[in-house]
Length: 337
Ligand code: PEP
Ligand code: MN
Image (cartoon, rainbow, N blue to C red; front, side, top):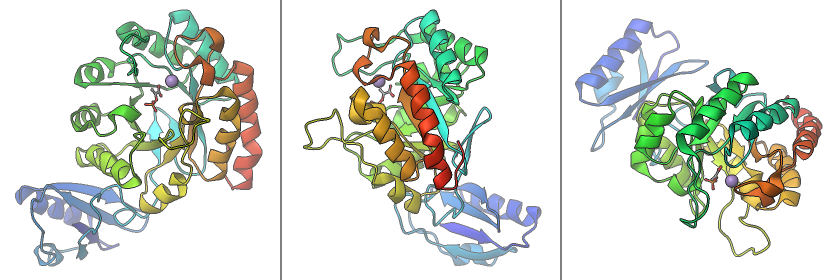
C-alpha cells in the first residue's frame, strides 16, 4: 500500500499518518518527492484497505502497489534516486566511475591503484577483501588487512571505497572501513546477508545474480529498502547464456528496463560482464550510451601478475583512456562525467 499525501500536507499530518501505520504494527517508509510525499507501507501479511488511511487528514489517496516489489518501484517514487557515497553521487545527471583491482593484494598495490584511479579520472576505489571464488583453492582475499589498506588508500587519494562482504561477520567487520558495501552476484539472493548489509547503514552496491531476472534483482533490492536502507545502487555484471566467446553476456537491455521499473540508479560492470580485457572498453562505452549511471571497472598496476581476474583487468593507461573517451558519449546524452 502506498499513501499519497497532499501537496499541502503539513509535517504534522505526515507524522500522524506514520504513527497510525506504526500503531497497526506495520512499517512506514516516508518517501519525500519533488511534488509531494508518499508513504510506503510494508509488513502487512494480508491486503490492507484504502479506507483505513484515506480519511486521515492530509491523505489524497491510498493505492495498492501491484508489483511484488514496492519500495523500489517507480509507482512508489517517480523521481530518480541519487545515492550519495561519501560525497560521490550515483544517479542523476553525473556519471560515477569506480575503478580498482579485483582484489586488494598489498598496501603498496592498493595505494598505487588508488593513485592510478584518481589520475585516470575515477571517482571511487574498489578492491576485494573477501573473494567468493568458484574454486575453494583459488585466492580468497586478504580479509581485514585488505580492508585496512583499502580504507587507507581511499583516504590518501580522496576516493570513497567499496568492497564485497559475504556474510554477517565480514559485514560487521567492514563497517568502519567502507563507504559502500557490495553484495556480489553470487549472493544477490542471500536474504540474511541483505538484511545485515541493510542494517550496516552504508550505501549498498547490489550486483545482479548471473541467472537472475529483473524481477528477482528488484525484489532483492526490495529487501534492502524494506529493512530501512534506501541507498541502493543496482549493478549489471553479465549473465549466463549460450554465448561461448565471453565469460558472461553483458545484458545491457536491463539498463533501460530497470530504469522504467525502478527509481534506483544502475551501473554496469564490463569487467566481469565480458571477462576479456579487450572487450571492457567497448562494452563500457556501450553501457554509458544506454544510460547507465556509472561503471565499475577492474584496473591494476600490473594486471598480468594480479592474484585474481588479471585477464579482464585494464592497465592503468587503458583505464585513463577509457574514462576520457566516455566524456563525449556522456555529453551527447546531456550528462556530465
Ligand atoms: C567483484 O566485483 O569483485 C565480483 C566478484 O563480482 P561479481 O560478484 O559480479 O562476480
Ligand atoms: Mn574480479
